[in-house]
Picture: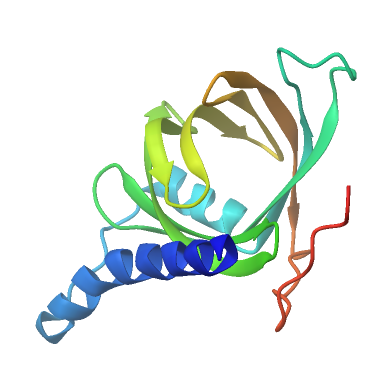
Length: 171
């Protein structure tokens, strides 16, 4: 039953994000203009995979655990908001989900800045992640657990979601 609820939550995220865009489509909404730094950021993260590590402050199993985030496409939708179309693999879910993300700038360096950001079915997150060159680094918080994250940005290595959801290995 929780699997159905999780799938429904992802569907509701997608509908809630896309609905305002569809409703305004007859008026032909013009995408925001991108400056040079924003163009570079968009090119850097379109069809990219963040491959690296994360740490957990409470972990006794060692500081570094592998992580992988697949980003299909990003688009600027307003002055400080970007839509990230990301692949989500969580339990039996394997799908691409659009997520509206605030991005702040320190000169030429973009930073994803989420504070108590709830993704239905997954939980509430806080993070600050900087992108520079072919690397990313930041901090994260999910409930009482938190830590650091860092790694490389790789191009063109995103894989397609499975047509059938993958099963989580038995523990």
